[in-house]
Image 1 (spheres, rainbow, N blue to C red):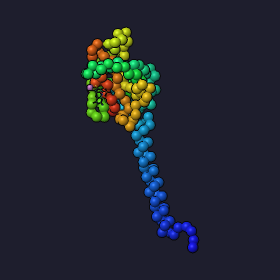
Image 2 (image 1 turned 45 degrees about the vertical axis):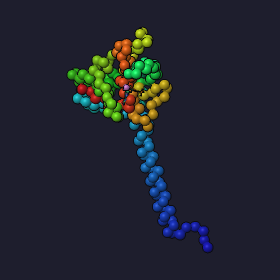
Image 3 (image 1 turned 180 degrees about the horizontal axis):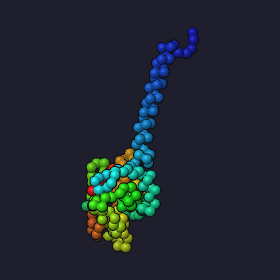
Image 4 (image 1 turned 180 degrees about the vertical axis):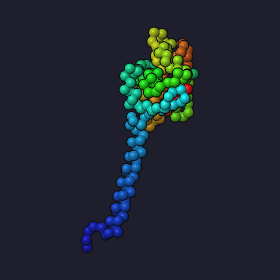
Amino acid sequence: MTIGYTSAHKKWLRLLLGILLLTVLFTNGCRSEKTGDDKAVIEINGEGILAPAKVSLEQMKGMEAGLVEADFFSLNSYGTREYTAFKGVWLWHLLQETVQLKTDATQVTIVAEDGYQVTYTLEEVQRKDYLDEQNPDSTYPMIIAWEQAGQAFDPDQGNPFQLVIGQREPGDVNKPYWVRHIITLEVK
Ligand SMILES: Nc1nc2c(c(=O)[nH]1)N[C@H]1C(S)=C(S)[C@@H](COP(=O)(O)O)O[C@H]1N2
Ligand SMILES: [Mo]
């Protein structure tokens, strides 16, 4: 009587270990594709720029001169008024840092994963005087945010970027413009 494995058993064991190893490698590979700042990117394309580009969350965080941290006021169509703290980068600054605009470019469409989209003229993107009807002295730029109330957006919920903008005038229902899970900026 010996203790151990027959050679047939060893073959099966090697096969099982092989499958296990492949499974671990494969699932880890998929996981690291979904998480990590380097995979959170926004694509910038369209005929209004010289060449398409991609901008990552890491790159955006490094755009010091364009960073914005503020409590943004929102009004939705039901009349709900709220303040939400966001951290992000001025969209105009982001465009300046990443692409070359053609002289005849006029607009930017902010597109989400679900197809929801909002279009602004370049002039509107540049404005820094969006307002909060309850705080007449404060003005805000249009930003792409990656953090809400001190928490980074969860990449498992969707691409972790959101457009945030104040009101154009008192009473402006601005919440619908807060495009979640942005994937593309299309410049025309
Ligand atoms: N990607 C995406 N973003 C979106 C929408 C949407 O359908 N898809 N709806 C918008 C509308 S109409 C409103 S009122 C707000 C709702 O945000 P809330 O669910 O946080 O209130 O999200 C805006 N952002
Ligand atoms: Mo809405």
